[in-house]
Amino acid sequence: MYHSDNAWYGHLKNMQTKAWYVAALVSWGIALFEYLLQVPANRIGATTLSLAQLKIMQEVITLLVFVPFVVLYMKQPLKLDYLWAALCMLGAVYFIFRN
Image (tube, rainbow, N blue to C red; front, top):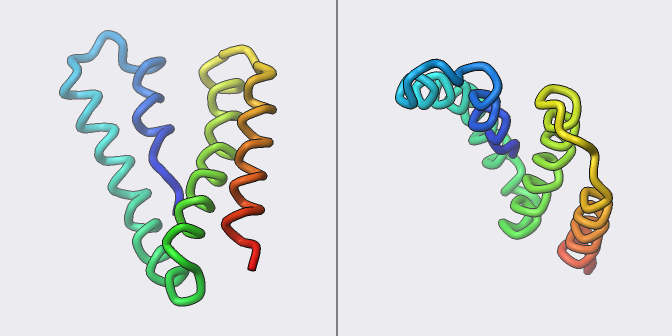
C-alpha cells in the first residue's frame, strides 16, 4: 500500500546532471519494485478492508515515510504544516475506520 514518492523525488538530489529520461527510468525501476510489494498487499488488504480504508492507509504510510525522507535525506526544513497535515490524516483515519 506504499506509494512510490521517494522514487520520484530522490532524483532531484542525485540526478541533477543526468537527462530527465534517465531519472525517469531509474524512478520507474524503483517504483516497479515498490508496486511488486504494493499490489499483493492491496489484494490481501481488500479481503478485510474497503477501498477507502486502503487508500487512507496508503496516504498515511506515504506521509510516515515521506516526511522523514524530506527532512533527513533531502535536507528540507521540518515545518509546522507537517503537524497540521498529520492531524488532518488522523481525522481521515478516524472517519474512514469508524463503524
